[in-house]
Amino acid sequence: LDLGCGTGKSFRTIRKYEPNKYLGIDLDVNNCIKCIQKYCYNINNKNYFFPANLKEDWNSHENNWYNFDFSIIYDYIICNFSIMHFFVDIFWDQVNKVSRKGTKMMFNVVNKNALKKMNIGNSYLYLDDQNVKYYFEHVHTKEMEEKFISTDIIDRTLKLYDWKIINEYQEKSGFESYYTWYIIEKN
Image (cartoon, rainbow, N blue to C red; front, side):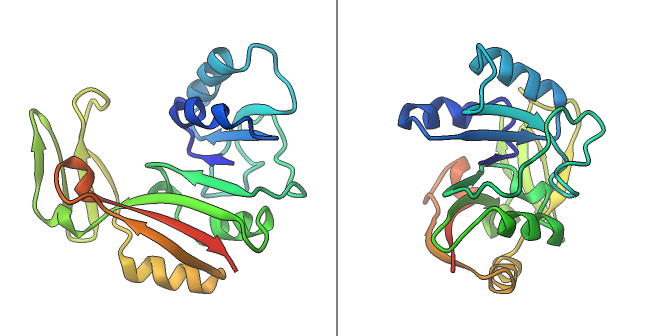
């Protein structure tokens, strides 16, 4: 289950492992259409992409063409460069519906290294109070902002929803050092 799948970059790697099922979900309908055109030459029950607002009921998107089946349990969940956009209670409630003991989930968030502004050409990222502000020249037309998710918030949320951290990784330098990657497991 790839939550916030964007343009499907993770799917390029995941499909090499021939999963029994892959489902990519993104708020942006255009991203989902592009992923279907690029990766799903014929729509089937094995690999699929559809739009949903992950901060709300996953079946409530105004352009929804697929009903999310909460009876299907996923072994692996990915939120690569996306969880900060839907790190809310209803998200965790729905993740728990499609998880079981041992389900693994990978996500990454901006860390406190962003207290020092990172500049690469005209692109930048920094932590301003409780918000992360960023602009990546090759992607954005204006400055973007998202909520900063601290380690305290992560710890409290994982405890509340019965998950545990099994691995935490952060690069020592460069752009990647501004992010911490977590692998968590459902208790």
